[in-house]
Every structure is written in C-alpha cells, then in structure tokens.
Length: 107
Length: 119
Image (cartoon, rainbow over all chains, first blue to last red; front, side):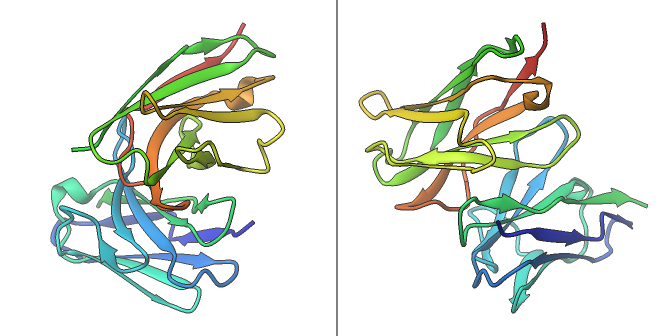
C-alpha cells in the first residue's frame, strides 16, 4: 500500500504566522492527494483535493502544491480557527491511505 | 446540501459484529462512491472501504476478511458490518461521500459514531 509520511508531527506557531506542512508519498501518486483539517470532536473537513484545488468554501489562505512525490499545504497568516490537526490522503490506489497527521498548535 | 446521518450500536461485545448504517440526503446518490472510515481514540484515520449504488465495493485488505459494505439505493442508505471484533476495533466510525464515479477524497461526512468493543 502507499504510505504517506507527514512532517513535522507538531508545528508550534503564533496567529498571523505562516504554516508549511509536508506530506511525502512512498511512490508516485500523480496529483491525487487531498488535505483535511480536523478539530477535536469533529469529522475531518476537506480543504484541498487533487493537490491544489480548494474545496468549496475554503479560504484562499490555504494553498496546496506538489513536486513529484512531495506535497505541501501552506496556510498563510494563521487564524485562531486554523489550529487543528491536518491529514493528507491519497486516492491513487487502493487501499486509500492517510498520513499520520500534523498538529498545528498555538505557540 | 448533502447530509449524512449515521446510526448503530455504540457498544459491541468481543467476537461480535459491528453494524452501522448511513443515510444520505441531498445531492445524487447514484453518481458517487460511499465510504466508511474509522479513527481509533487519539489516533489517525483508516479507510475501511467504499461502495457505489450498484453494490460494487472496494475494501481495505487489512480488514477485507471481516468487513462487508452494502447498499440500499432505494433508500439512499449504505451500511458496514465488521465481524469478529476485538478491542483494536474500538474507534469513531465515519460515513462519507467519496469520489464521483470512483473512489476518491471524501467531501461530506457523517457525524461519527464511537463504537466501543468491550464485554
């Protein structure tokens, strides 16, 4: 199965700062990667699909990019509501798999 | 507005069978794959499998011998059964809308059901 490795595990930042989250795939997945945000007690929320497309209603401060098997989620100017856990997920091959998550916490 | 409402038993005995159902309202049921995902307490997400309106299903090989996903397209419902459960199957189980005409990245999710395996 395709393994997704997310880094760092935890990111400690202040509101207004920029966040850069990484997700590396164990093999080529084209651009078939999504990013999710999850807050405690809530279902995950789709932010980005197919590497760089923002889902409906997602603010422009969330941006996805990729190069080869390396994918990046950038959150420019963190808002208080952005502090959460972020997961990447690939849909290139079965079984669909998720990364282990990156927690963005308030510094 | 697509909405998913799920229900099922929150407590299952070891060696028993976990059963959950998800009802879909709004949007097209026919054109999407419908997905089950789980999350053990404090851990990450695991894709269980998905199914389309005709009953064509895909499963995670790690669970394939124990899991069955079924669909009732006449009611816009889909269900998951997981047999021979152990404590390792304790998790929040989510239903979600998957890809258009294929497995994809879920965009609409149910509220989640915590299923605890305990005697």
